[in-house]
Each structure stands twice: as C-alpha cells, then as structure tokens.
Image (tube, rainbow, N blue to C red; front, side):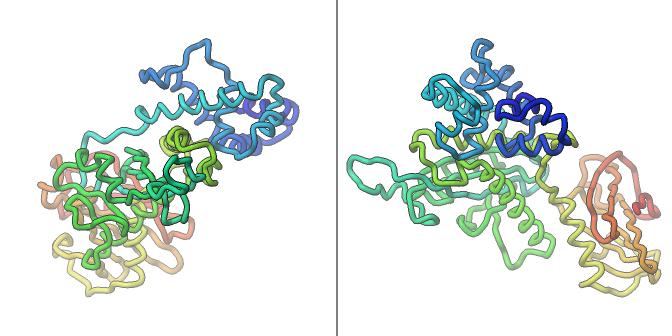
Length: 411
C-alpha cells in the first residue's frame, strides 16, 4: 500500500528505496491523511463489509481510484491540479465522479465503525461535544442568506456536528450532522443519545449544554478534585478527536461542494480517524490518551505538593482515610477511592535522595464494589525522571486483604 500510494503521486521505486521508511510514511500521510496500514484496513473493509451501500465489487476495485478519494479529502486543490499530480490522461470528469464514488463507499462504513456500546460498567460513559464547520452559502429560492444555515461561531453558513466518544474505549460511538442554527442541546436530542444511556449513567459535556438534564454532567464547583480533573481530561480527549478530523482539508477549510455532499465527506473523514485510534499496531497506532493514566499523574503530583497529613501507625486500616499522608517517615500513601475507578488501591511513593520508587498496594475492601472476590494487580510504569506515570495496566486476579504488604514495584 505504501509503495503503490507513493508511486501514484510520482515517487519512483528507486527514490523510495533510498529513503528511510519513516520518510516514505510521512509523505504518504501528507497526500492521503492516514498511515498506509490504515489505508489497507479501509480497503479490506470495503470488500468484506456486510453493509450493501459500502461494499465494493471486484469489477469496481481500482486501487488508483481509491487513492484519488483519499487525496480528495486530505488535500484541497482543483481537479486540474489533482489530475496533474496523479498524471491522469483520461477524462477529467470521470476522475471527479470516481472520487465521489469512493468517498461515498468509505462514508457508508460509518454504520460498521461507529456503534453504541452494549455494556455499561461505570457511571461516566461518554464525552460529548459539538464542532462547527463552515461552508459556502447554499442556494435558496426564497432567501439570499437562509438563517437556518447560519453558524454564530463563524458568522456564515455552516454545520453543527455532534460527536459522541466513549470514555474508556478508543471508539467514536455516533456523529449527528445538523444545520448551523441548531444548538448543541437540540442536536444531542436528535442524535438519540439518551436512548443509549441507561439510568444512573452520564455523559461529560462542556458549557454549551443544559446541565440540568439528569444524564449529562458538566462543570460543577462542588465536585471533588478527582472528578474535576477527570472531566477536564475527558473534554481534552474529546477535543483531540475533533482536531484530528480537521487534518483533512475538506473539513479544515470552507466547504465548497454543496450542502448535499458535506455529510458524505464528514462521515468519510470520521471513518478514517476511527481507524487511526482503533489501531493497536505499534508501528502505526495513533490512539487517544488514556484518562486513567492522567488520574494517576494528577494524584502523584498532589502527593508531592499539596497534601501532608500526620503519620499513621501500621495497625491502622489505610482504607479508612482519604487523601495523602506520610508513613514511616519516607513513604507517601495515596488512597484513591472512587466508583468510577477499578476500586480501592494504595499507591506508595518512596523518596531517597534523587531516586523515586513507586509501589502499588491493593486491598480487598468493601467487596460489594467489585464483580468478583478478587481483583487485578495494577502495574505502573514511570517516566525517565520518575515523576509521572506513562502507562497504567490492570492484569491478573488476586485475593488480597488489608493486611497484605507491598505486592508490586516499578522503577
């Protein structure tokens, strides 16, 4: 896929062999917006999907035409310039028709790539945000400028797109495309989110929504530090997904192809971004950051800066307290108690000169909080300067009691 994609835009085989692979991948992404592995995954899905409108027949399978469609959403250029780039000597109108054919096929994969979850294990499930896109003023027989399309953010005609992200998975669950005049709350109601969110679960939102709804949760000054930090990271993660949509020039700049074709282009770009974040291959993975790691970093910082409580004896039950306290003169214990997390665990930070060691201490406390009598071991990996957690994993299963000693140590 990498070789043929670059060959289409005039990079010869000899030139590709002289370069490092990273350089070839970088140029491939500059022309098509995604990694060659993601392009191959989309190509495969078009032939194996069960969605009739997205499935491509063998007689329609021209890889060159597929690259035309990818280049259209990635790079803004006239059809004549694109024809010269791909050195196409055929009918220029055929090239334009073919690009829209492939974009329509990719966009139809949205029903396969973006699905609502079926299990709900935590209180907060989604993050929700609306993003605006500009377009040329659509033609209207009654209005010179139809107010239904007016976007207050850009002061021109546009679209309001609602994006629903799963907080705990690399998954965009739904996109709802509406006219620019429709506000975020109306758009959210149209999307059907509340039908896919059981009672007791919530979605994290920003200030553009009506927070009085029982299934939505935005900024609240009475939230604890943990919850405030969690919501801030959830919103930041959502904005990261929105920013990746706009690496495609067809969405980054004012849309010029008519109001009928915008949903096709947006859905195609959303499918491509979903392939990016879903990929687990270390060579091409481009996932969104993990909110759980951010929580641990937040409390690791608090342990060193904000909170210093009195030492406690070894006979005391550490799960009876919250916050941070010193023990034995050199250990700082952090008690994270939240129904949003896996459960109760202790993280110990030991300082000795310039070195810092991080320990985990799990305790079986309040078994009703867990689905089984035991729960997994938490493994933390620290950064080079030993001041932040760069990865966070839950593995295995162990029956522990509050009397257990340190069970996991990471340098």
